[in-house]
Length: 289
Ligand code: NAP
Image (cartoon, rainbow, N blue to C red):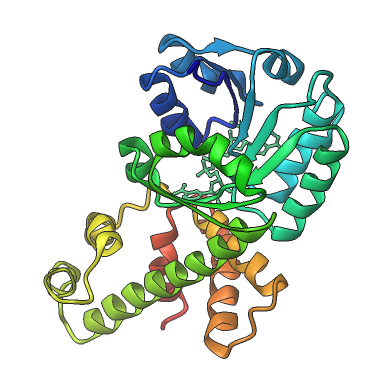
């Protein structure tokens, strides 16, 4: 069977390695990014460069978006020249892999369906390294038949794809798993700060964590960041703050959940937003916690 032609919009920390994996697997891909220079590494690997979204739609069967947040996805779909203003959408499939509100997903899926464009939400769990390794976990909402159509793509980007229900279900699951991620980052940060106050080194605490049952992939990946105080972003703190805000808007109401949402929100607006999410430790340290 001929491979579907992919149109990829959004070449940031995640979009770039994901689109590269599709190229490596032999998919024909056209790419578009608001800041065009970020598309050039993909073009060097064989992707076609679209200078407009219409050009991308014309050369694609499946249009994938991987952009920052609700405003970015809405801009890509609804702004003048955006996906929904393009001709030739009928019979194609859009897959939004960004993490956004389930309400935004349902809204855009409704608009797309009026034009005959099928729509899946397929946010991912896993950061830059799993994206590079094709080891993401892909959380899918929308019609099962469309999920099946997209499965060869998901198989290339991730180690697992799961169909969770109707439109928005992928993003609901994504907000839940990122709530857990925020708890874990907060927990590691509090562990380190408490231990430091007692004269125990960060490297020793991370070794204790990683060797025990509470250590996990994320604690191992973030150990170097915490030990070296290097918070170059893999998953920017502003994005996790966004996910917690979305979880709150979707009904998160526990004391701990709301406190952590407030911590990330304040950390993001205090200048740490472009650092990695593990930089919550810097915010808590400044608070004297
Ligand atoms: P990123 O590095 O900040 O990249 C964001 C992308 O969105 C860029 O291509 C950017 O274009 C584009 N964009 C932003 N605003 C736009 C607008 N108004 N119109 C058009 N394009 C716009 O973000 P990322 O880390 O790749 O994350 C992408 C999504 O995946 C987010 O929803 C995030 O929550 C989710 N996610 C991230 C991770 C992670 O570890 N990084 C893990 C799982 C899920 P420009 O280049 O022009 O700025």
